[in-house]
Image (cartoon, rainbow, N blue to C red; front, side, top):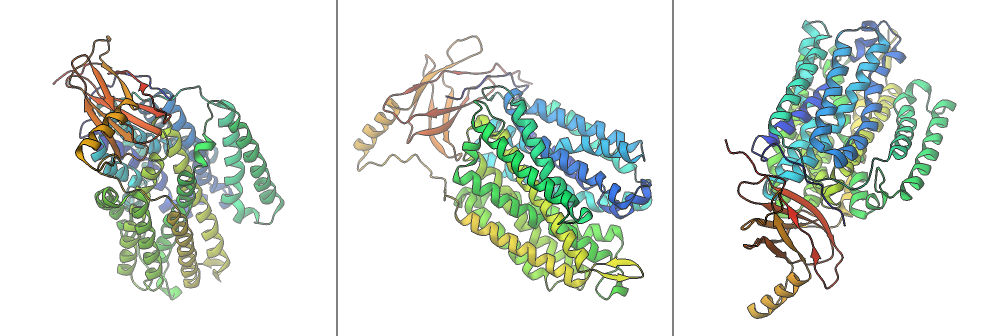
Length: 579
């Protein structure tokens, strides 16, 4: 049975925890989006060839992909807040390195360190699951999951304004300042989670996954430069397949793997991760196409002739709409379940790209496309962590969401490579300069629509899950219901609620939720601290204990489904200090 090692939270999970964690996610997104306005100028700014300058972007992609599942697992083992602060601190160091240099190698080093911050998203989601009551969890996870789009949408016009009117190094000073602020707020507001996973860190597994990801993502991101049929590209892709297969075999034989592949192979986890790749593809296509369409000169016949700043403002509603869909997602998911919300989101994305094929003639039309796509992507992104959390034990939340975030990153990487190739192959050459064509833009939207269709098929095969209002304890009369309830309690969870010194805690509220986050049972501890909870079926559960004057405790546990109870004492982490 999975157990928790309680830690003393620095305070209660108050109302400021969610905005602070979401702000940390937004800071990470800002870091990613910083260079978008100056991408075309990087060779000149760094005095490097175009092929070498792209390593400034590729390095962040690779380090983020490697760091995301590793930081998630370390958070499960050693504390999610601790690793969240560490990932943000590494990002600040990387931003300061980039801020003080125009040397290519130092810039790549700084950007590599900044990519480590990508682990903040799954760590933030894990902290929310461990600390928040169920009624707040849905909207909170939705906001955290969509923060990557929110930050990107808000940062694009701001970064364009800075790049157009100031030294581009100021972008990195801004990112470092935001990172320091996020660290300070996290330390001041966010308590450490008491939930811990068993086992040790799987270093061979981390090295194997890192090697496999680098071997896969490197040719995906550089294939257009090297040639998709070149020996280097095909050789690296082949090596990635071999390394990842060997890594998978090794992970299945380890008692405490970096990624529990048996859990990952569950239908709901596997299909959610595959759908996440498709959502990642659809998210990035609009980010690649619309800024270029808006900034192309009107002399091309299809360009809209807007400045860098105006182009950023036209695409900004993509991120803003993602933020506003978080409360909408929470209501829809509470009523219909995250699967339905994911399906609705994908349908809205499909409508956005389908309609966008005919909305490329004016700047206001791109704003309409951005708003529709933002709404759909916001709903889809918000559904993904809820689906993952509902399918894995609490002690694996960080690693599982880290893997899911990685799947989205793979989707954006594949999207970048494919759309870059499409736009290059359909471009017109005018005066020695390649100009993207309207046909290329529309073909990119068609590819995005196809990815959404694949994601929709995958989502439809997910298990349905509407949250029931009560445990499934059916009986034909009140007397039968009482007998059935008593029998369920006898074979459920039981134990005592204790304080840090082992003294029983009376009147503590103990709640049991299943792996989908649905309430299964609730009770109040007796004068001797004892409690008993009914279990409707075998499987993983999460017990949460709350008592006045004490910090809350969250304890994952698994019931074998046999007709005898599971004994589990719940030691509250410690007393809180009232202001």
